[in-house]
View 1 (tube, rainbow, N blue to C red):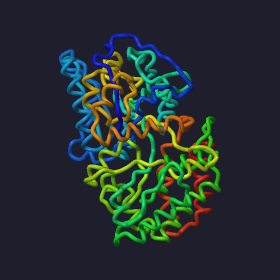
View 2 (tube, rainbow, N blue to C red):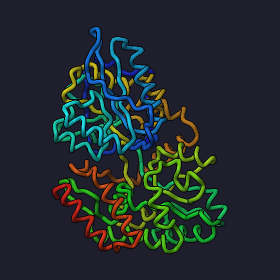
View 3 (cartoon, rainbow, N blue to C red):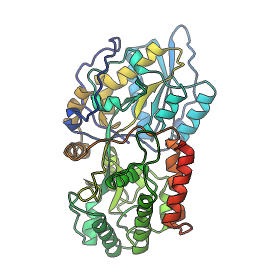
View 4 (cartoon, rainbow, N blue to C red):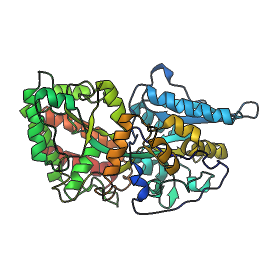
Length: 455
């Protein structure tokens, strides 16, 4: 959910016209120390949530509404960025609107339906095409946002139908986070992530669960996670969605995915279904790894610092099992999240200025650091990486080390992809509570998803 960066000391001003450079390849920019992606901060907004104030102006000044999701940490970070921008532009007021991950999309759907979209809003790849197709987002290539200093391959992920509707904040990789202390306490050796297979993974997780003290497990269940499922599918020569927006994963691969979780639950490698269900809405800090009650979990690289802080000691990032013996490697680079602008903003020039400031300015880069993924601005990325704390540097090194192994990234998901997580979560519960077999869940998943995305 969070990133890494490298920006120049004085990035180009917001008034300079945007220049776009396209590429279909993962360029050298991804190697600079690829890093955490922040795509998903999930926390409670609590009493800090601010109601939308519309785009009205007072006394001739411009008011912009800025919407985001995340934990309290992210709320504070975004507010600091807004404050820094307002200090440079005293005639522009940024009104914050924030909530947690689930509440954000519910609220955004409501405001969009009412014709009251925030001027600047954070976007996520699963919802990008949906909001583009509905005409909600502005084509940022038509506004004064400097893009010539940005990672071209990463920038291209915000393009839909030849328009740039979202600019990624940074880069992330979905990985395995391991707790060496739990391994040591159980007397189990850490795996070699360059060679381990899924069979070896099952054996290791089971051994930790059997040898560790009661209440400590080999892994936290990840059967609900579409990013992990996509890695697994790619290893099998498939992908969650095709370039044409159709479901690209087979029932057989889905069945294997859920059978692994069920087998590990039965072997003691992961918690019982009741514990897994209770943990579904908990943040990374409350995970088994973060509370030192689990040896492994799946998470974005930019979450390493937060989880390490919760655990109270150093953790390690590992490749997914099966990367060395599958039909191909499955891990991929993914934009952490995106900055977008309302197509109906009454103040598009000022909204573009704010987006440019957030993604390109030294002031914003110093605030955001690695919290929104490895920065899209290459100068910011290079500068900030050198200043990162130990856990973030580990993440940057890990992502950079994958450059020769990662072949490509999945296409932008089709409209309706935002519902996949809920479908996976519900069916995963059915499997783990043994109300559905893995095969039955796979068949139901295919039917439901094809109905949602029109595949």
